Image (cartoon, rainbow, N blue to C red; front, side, top):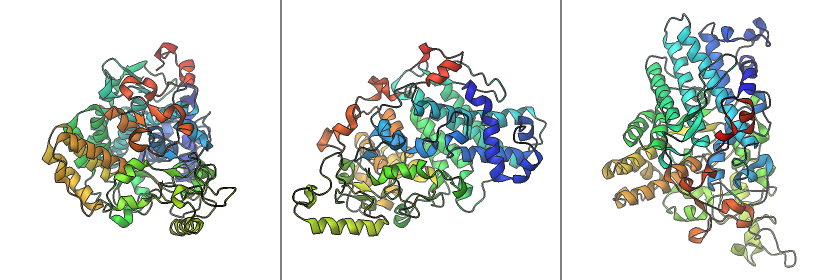
Length: 554
């Protein structure tokens, strides 16, 4: 932390000031940007917020020295949750950006891995900049204005977001451990050199800090300017709904069911559920009505082959996708009712066109020239016709391999391209599901049913929530709904930790994953008995931080 943070402020300031207000750079040399300049007025403080927004999706080497082009921050961290959980299933052996290594659980379990290191430093760099604003406003001689409160609210929300991400990855799950004694992550409150952190605080201490920050954020937002309406860019700005949504996530992860339910209701106000057309449009823009918060990825700062959709969308024109179409767990897809339009984005009968497919059923037989896919045995015409139909429907070509149960939930606005698209972090659907889970855990059956009903009836024309009339049946159904509704959006990792569920690709007929490809990650014990769910503290941090020793390693 110490070595990386020392230079970060200058790096992010160059990025943010260059892209937001060129005349600031004309007045201030890039090697002389200081905290005093950043805190000189509200305009400059807002530029720091803009830099934080862009830092969420920029390639990490633009954020701090020693960053790596293979990690474009949330482009990588968002789908990583479903990659680790076995939800975003690989159909072939491709390892661009270490994506296969992640899937096989051979990255986050190593203290020297790029993922452990970059995620740690990215989140702490968010905290550093939040601290700069929080401390500067607290210690400065500023007149309180609605705009200043909005900036303060965003800073507190960012800090809470970063700490929640850190403690959920580098600490044991709150509900499955002993949070008062389990080690979490260091608290960092400084915004000036030498950026010295505290030793690792307990999971409970980190959760307490998150609560304090979110309460402060909500209070500031209540007295601040509202987020403007408009296009996708405005939803990059954090607002009171984002703070309530993060508090709902925080409360759900710690079993504070009443708070989770009430905060989820507040978070989704003003963000109506999408209809079928919008739900099937590709999840590529903040303009969707449900989007509470997301990064608006501007074209001049695109990450190209480092993007979320390069790793997860079957329409992105990159080798990770063309060679390795991503598929969904067939046990989940098969369970989706035919009356539920979400089933349509999972192509059960897509032909297996990849000779290198992990299940050895792809391509054409070298001897007979017929499909090896048993769904198209002796039916070359049907195989070719279905492939052409899928290509035409989703804007791809024969350069893209296909595979049964491949998805088209995440789609580029411009299919078959490498154009940048937005990265969605929070939707109102998630908030309905949080409320439903929280009420089910309180054994409030009518309340949980009422929370599920709007979402279920929008998605499924035959939906009847009353059939789920016990706590167990409700929880089973809520888990199913989360797996369908939020598939590909990165919630699998934290969901499984909260539910204390392992990974078993072999159970109940199998997920469709290959044991040869998935290796030890084909079956993984539940988090309460397997500490491999906890990310390793970066070795570089242990080497640099005098307050963290080898004995602190997870």
